[in-house]
Image (cartoon, rainbow, N blue to C red; front, side):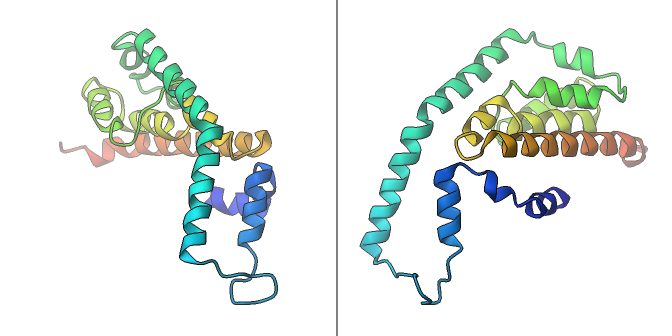
Length: 185
C-alpha cells in the first residue's frame, strides 16, 4: 500500500507509454454525460476491444516469446540444488541475493507452489523462499519485458526497486518470526 501511495504521490501515470497515457487521460474524462463524453453501442465496444487486442498482441508477442525463452534457458543452466546450497544458511544477505537470483527466472503463480515446497523441504528459510518466489513471479526479466510495453524506463525502474525492496523486507520479516511461528512444530 505504501508503494501504491508513493506511485500516486509522484504521479507515476505520466511515465506510462504514450498510447497508454492517452487512454488513461481519456478514461479520466467525466462519464456522466458531461461535455466530450460519448456513449458507445455494444457493437462499437466490441469493435474497439477487438482492435485493442490486435494492437496489443502485435506489440508484445515477440517479447513474450523472448522473455519466456530466456527464463526457460536459464532454468536449464542453473544446477539442481544450487539455490538451496547457496541461499539456505539464513544469513541477512541471502534474502536480497535470492530476490536478485530470481530475476532472470520466470514462473507463474500456480507453478511456483511446488518450487516453494521443494525449497522449504531442502532447508531454505520461509522468508527467503517467499522472497525468491515472489521475485520469479512479479520481478522476473520476462515480466519486465512485458511491462516495458506499457511503462517508460523511469517508471519501470521505480516499480522494480519498489518490488525488490518489498520482497526483501517481507523475506527478512518472515525469517525473523519463523522461529516463533514454528517453535513447537
